[in-house]
Amino acid sequence: MQTFSEKTDVHPDQLELARVFSSVWLYGPPMCSELIRLVAHLFTPEEARTARHLSYYIPISAEKVARRAKEPAAHVETLLEAMADKRVIFRSDKKRYAILPLIPGMFEYLLMTGEDSPWHREYGRLINALYATGYTRRYSTTPSPMIRNIPLQEAVEHKSTMVDADLVEKMIEAHENLAVLNVCQCRQSHAFEGRSCSRSHPEDGCLVFGTLAESVASQGVGRLVTRTEMSDIVKRRWEMNLVFMTANIHPSSSNAICTCCDCCCHYIESINRFNGRVSLAEPHYLAVMDEEFCTNCGKCARVCNTRAHTMTGREHAYRVDNCIGCGQCVAACPQGIITLRENPGYTPPSKSWLSFGLKVLPSGVLSSLKALFRKG
Image (tube, rainbow, N blue to C red; front, top):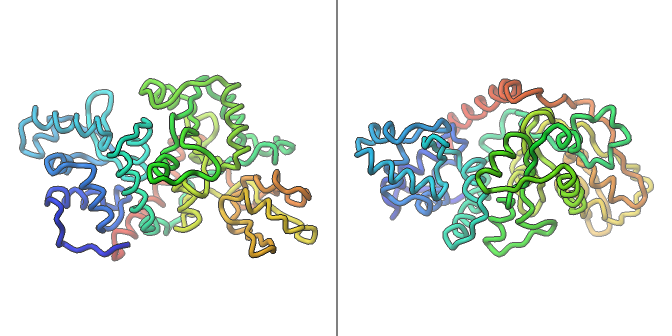
């Protein structure tokens, strides 16, 4: 991460807004040149001066922002609408506005339309550069099981009495409304830099279930699909050797699944590089292999997104601590010597969003407080 100096050619209002986005309550990075360049790209000085008065997460009216900023309400509303059209701030259906964290938050919200312009491409480059600083490590101090992996169905379906809450088919069966986002924001941002995905395509967007599916379809950022179509999409994504990540709640709750890869996706990057495993729930299953019969063919290493299976020269190595229990290696092994076995540390997902929030909020606050009192 480049060091930050007060000497900068960025407008003071943009600099002050960068300080807002660096707040630990927005899971922001420390002040650094990457953050400042990003904010200066997203907000004009006049927009930045207004955006500084928005609340975090909870949308407020233009009138309230105007009172805080001591500016004419009509002028403030015009600026807020311009920022909302760019999707650099959140706008509710009731025309209220809020600041979202840079990632996750603004990143997905801004790019989910699939729009491609020089401005969007530069944003993709800047946000990737900021994430690559590894600032998310400052929040990786307290276990917080927010995300769970959904294992490959064919690897565990013979034990279906044990894995009902883990299979994608259970989510498909539980909801009338299903949708697919127009793009995967991670792969799209990499494509903007001229980097292609080794496993998938930017058009392979997240899978969305329940009321969330209705919302993305109404916004035009995704399309509704039938249960049969969703099952076919899931099968194709498994065949691409993607891993399925979702919020750690029961399949009956409205939810989304990111189908992730190790070359583009920020969450997998956080697991592999930035200690992001603290936000990953203990998987229901872990891979176990009979290494005596391993032929060192390397096929398991080619499909593994979290470097549990690796090849050094022609020799295979397996590190169970890196395993997330996705089951891709089980399907890939031609010798049939890899199986999934139940993880004794597994706990079932939360039954609802309320119980999920009550479970993860204390650890999230603790991580933020630790980041607040640490230097940088």
